[in-house]
Image 1 (cartoon, helix red, strand yellow):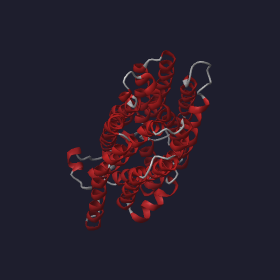
Image 2 (cartoon, rainbow, N blue to C red):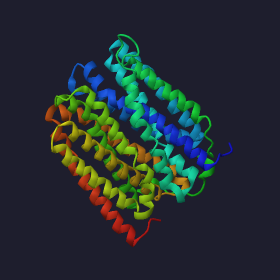
Image 3 (cartoon, rainbow, N blue to C red):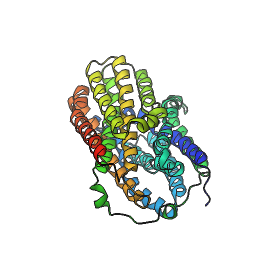
Length: 394
């Protein structure tokens, strides 16, 4: 299959990212609240969100193997089909008031994200290593659209079908997957087994590079902290007596904070290096904790969640960029798969614990629980920056 121009491929991937993340943000906005309504045990309210993250982790390894054998486009198309199935299952679950089916639907939605998470790596392949950070950042920036489209579709679809609250929201979500299917059909990238032939080191040898575990740790901690807090936020807002209408703008501006910096994160990484930007991300995430602990008014939630989003952006894009510097072309499939499985495995644990921590100990304790992880990741990023000054990554 002949490859299209790098700009066209990156643009398709960025637009596909916007559609996928709009679908995921819609689910993030509704899943915990609807889970609380459907679950017999309120401690299981965040299980649908956790199921989505588990689906992401479970799909990451088979997605990498499939794309290695068949190419990026078939894998991305299958992912969009899984998203379509997840939306349909979730809508049916709400119609039946079936919590188990609702969880299954979110596993499928997470599997869609598990395939789509390789968009950013495909963008690097399209743009070339010299423009890796900008390509990653541009694809991640597709989430700015999701900040507005996801919550708005959730609200718009609430009463779309009379007597079927939020069923319309998940039907609207299915349209996003259909649009992604149509768009991804125009993607043209070389097959990975052709483009990345050559000698490859074993994964055990690759992991001994100091930069690789730090890259994975940084992305994993940044994502896990972000998702744990974001998952519990709708419950905390309602639990503190704020009106339900407060949830949408808080999540919306949090997602803006996650993705809007992507327009300049790549430039910052080129100028200052990935480890330094990762450090800035962890400092911002620690700043979020301070804001979250300062009060439970609407402005506290809003400002803390915006800072949480910006911190995630720096930590995640910085970690991903550092990861791309640790492997040869022939090694990328297994390194990327190991990275995605590790990152989203930790994210799944964080999401599963979010509902339990909030239900048992409250909002303040949940935020304090992330501090040790952030401090450890910050120290690791400082250490790797010093190491790379002495011995550049091979």
